[in-house]
Image: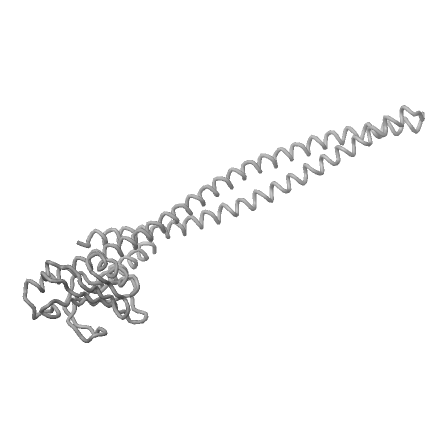
Length: 289
């Protein structure tokens, strides 16, 4: 059962990764100033805001001015590998509602027009490499974030497991202590029973003595014996209650330990699944070149 769950998880992750893109492809997109040839890249597990923010921040490093009014636009951008003159870079992220996939459209405008498949081969190759470099960097960033979150999740699960184990150990220790206290209470009851039997005989004898030969001293001794009997009865009652309470506590703790073991089993299954996820995401990150 556990093996089938883990296999299903691996296949799901592999399928999702397969849908993502690894290389820039040519395309076209309708920007605010018209339809232009683009360099497209498909991402998974992100959103429009994140991708456009990434490109905005990167374009700020090389552009005279960056606008985000209708699309991300880097004006006066320095891309010497593409053109000796400044260029304009336009970028727009597109994601269908409910889809995990997102397409980043990047257009580059030079003094010779928009760079596309029909442009000079070296220019097109350099522009493709520029977009590929940033797309790969963004993929690594996203993959690292995904891995970090998965590792945090694994750490939380392992912490939960450790806490459960500590709770189990504390409960087992309490069971032993409760059994010991219960046994001591049972011994105390036996001791009280012996004392009460002895007191009963002494009280009966003292009563007979007081009845046959009344005296202040005899009455005082009888009252002292009766008080001692009351104290012993109270001690016996408390010992009986303690024994009962300890038996109940042992039952409750035994049930808690049983449930804890079940919880640990389920937690271990969660850890196993999370370990598969972490290892898969580590490999995913390592595969991004």
